[in-house]
Length: 139
Image (cartoon, one colour):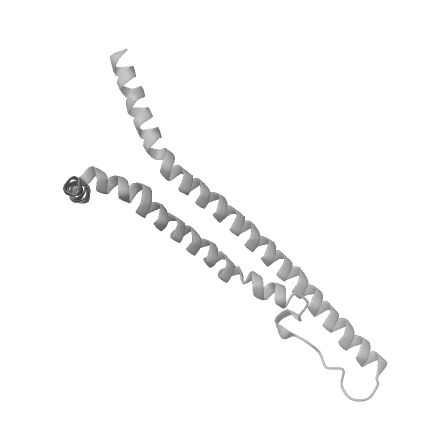
């Protein structure tokens, strides 16, 4: 019995069909998932969604105006309104970038899921098309 099992294992290691099935159903899906994960991580790093959320209400490009020494109402209102506008511009641009990054992540997730599931459906499609082709040839 042990000799038969070892013969099967050695045969399975050298059989090209077994090697193909092992690659197609075990090794390639792991690679697809790793590639999919890399694209998702690229999107998070490229759009810097975490950093944009941390600095959401910061000045746009650190453009800020000083209030200066002493109290001058005109200078105070000018600096306050300029700083407020800089923060509003920062919020608007960060919001657009965050939304764009989230849309990119959703698209990459959906496309990766289609590719992953399509990998397993592809042999069925290929064999179905061959069968349909032979049926059309014989009819």
